[in-house]
Image 1 (cartoon, rainbow, N blue to C red):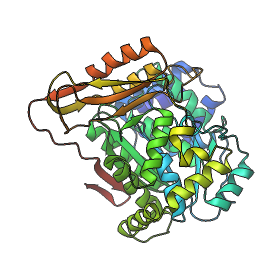
Image 2 (cartoon, rainbow, N blue to C red):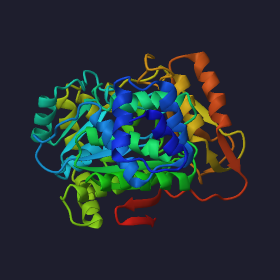
Image 3 (cartoon, rainbow, N blue to C red):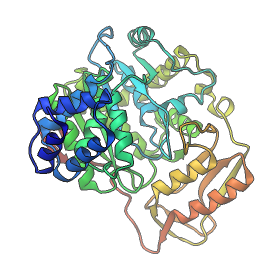
Length: 442
């Protein structure tokens, strides 16, 4: 089988066979195909696309290029959740203990953040002593014992995807729906999940800024799940402004704790209940989304969701005192600066990506994977889109440890805020839901 023939076939709009895709991925993973040929193939896919069957084959071959996590020792149906990334995306910190409290096993492989999107592990490490360095045996035992565990991702998952992603990043082929979908889904499938719930972000702070493109990605990933026998649901959610009010590691942990107490921001609470309801249904712990939502609301109201979070932190070595007294035991910045409005009006836009970069400038994120983050710093919004503002009123609080950086971040934040003289409606948080039965608007 000749690689150049496969490239020509895709270039001309042909559909590749399973054998051709297997040859391409496995030979590339063994360094038998040079980068320039794989780049040519990726560009052909960028322009010609792939069928659902081709995309599913590509996904499975990337899974087979490395090791797969075996979760069979964990009792029950394992449902994984994945977000395509955003600003202030605290959902995993809320969803994990919430759905575990409802009887759903949560076996979560997570990573660290790069750029303006925070990683779940970084956030959890705001708890002194918290460790995600678990063996697979201990990982499974903990899920069976308390219903939830979070472990760092192994370096041996989907190596072909890692190679291809690095190549796409420097060849202008990142924005290909089949390649994005297969990259995300290969990691979820290799992670051992029985079913998958996807949070596909759209808006200024999301990778998919156009809503229709986000819907295309959601449909492609659900299609892959269906093809490979994993029940998959995708929720399309808004990221035209940061989710919730907190952006930054310890600040987001604190907000997650408020949400588990039933005191969280409305948009974060709504998204978590929506995602969590589908996780509960896919785990077969409830028959309908409505029944699942009622159960989750009960777990928040009776305190069992927060209790599960405390149990989870303790099991992984974290300082549980911070669950009860986050202001005292979570990292805190030396200074808090108020950003005030220069005029009255209504908040009409909050550039989520720019606000995320502002938090990264304060030290909450990484420009390179070797950067050390500051868990204490970040931003707490006091106004969101649609909120009226008086001149001199506080728009946000910047938490920082460096005077010069705080001054630069303050100006950057102000540039990310747009005020209008007219009333503005807040954006809809849930834009649509895609299942194997089709798509419905919310």
